[in-house]
Length: 83
Image 1: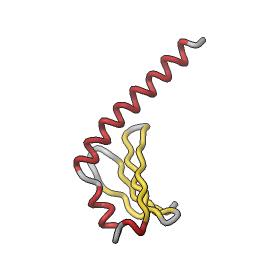
Image 2: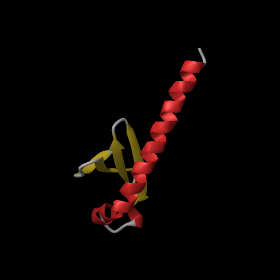
Image 3: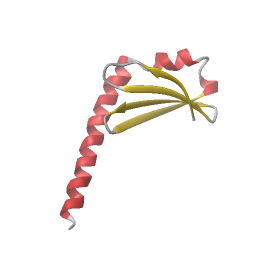
Image 4: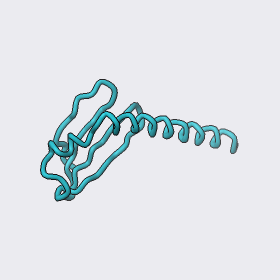
């Protein structure tokens, strides 16, 4: 997997990769990450992929990160209750 670009953002670590004829957008917040893949043939350029990273996408990502954290915390509670 080849890193194409780090995309600056005040809240997230956002990186754009290229792998197996796909672009991969990775959004990280703390210990969690989300990845989005799109075929190279489905866009005209790296700039097209960057334009897909909209404020709405990032707002929705926050909601998913919160859900991920909730699920992870539930896993810890279950782990501790099984002893």
